[in-house]
Image (cartoon, rainbow, N blue to C red; front, side, top):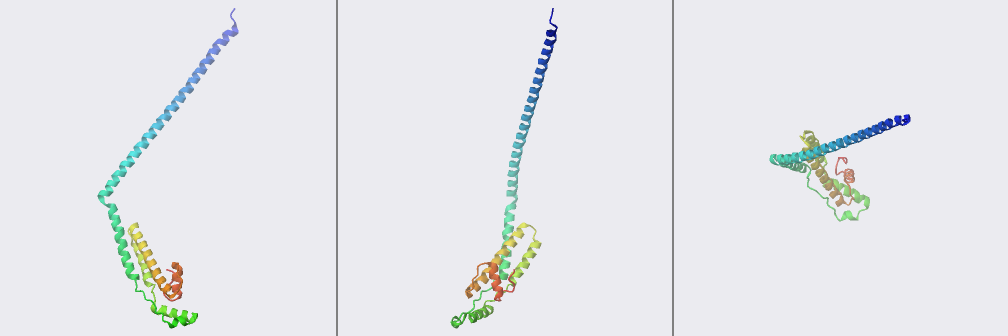
Length: 205
């Protein structure tokens, strides 16, 4: 007589193994799909990156050729140096003054320090006066140029010219003070001392 228990177990065992195999195949199939999808995405990304790189290179070459043909760089450079040269010439013409040095006689060397200082101060005011108005006028001119500037190149040229002229005024004051025996090191210190001695009107420029 057949074993009823065995009859029930065998079909169930086969069915369970079958289901496990099917489930395993589904998992492998899904993993294959994910892997294939990942490869596809990677391939598309690499392709787009290469295409983008080629596009950028071609665009750069085309732009360089266009710039070379139109002479934009040459025009901008010429405009920068022309504007700067004209502005520097104008500003130097306003601020460049003949330097006058006070005379130091032998008698002043024998005076006491206070009298000697007063005499030097008077001599400096009389012979070494430097008018700061050209620098102030130059500052107004700088503001005007910046207000009327058409582009960044005009602004750069104006600012650099002002810095050069400011340094020139500093050196003029510094030379006069050094000739009188005053220690001068920094621009603000020089302009402050020059204002105290009457060389300039305004130490804050």
